[in-house]
Length: 153
Image (cartoon, rainbow, N blue to C red; front, side):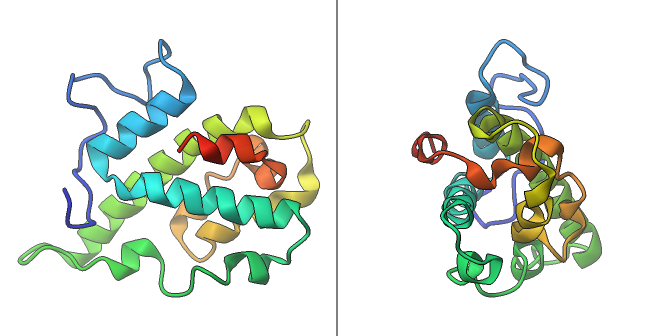
């Protein structure tokens, strides 16, 4: 929903599952997931791309993340009245993980050949959350992502 908490499902309005629909581009799967679960992921993708561009330009991880202070998203969004706070945060973490994996598929074509040197930097936007685990070799080298990837969001 529009409350920042997410819609809960992993499909879109047409009943398709964007995580599994190979007939559409990675960007479309990511966008479908964002629209179906929480449109804030579209803004988060732009922020992630901005951080990756700054890292690729030589900024330190702290400098690249400076515009984004505060708690992790799943800790900042209050649960709906009467909801179990721990279960709500876990749901947000799962949605965030799905979104991150879909975003990695979008960014992968814009990364150099497998580079393990930037794997720590790729996890920085999610550091301190359980969602940092999905960082893959494709996302690990995404610090060199081109600005064309961020323009798509």
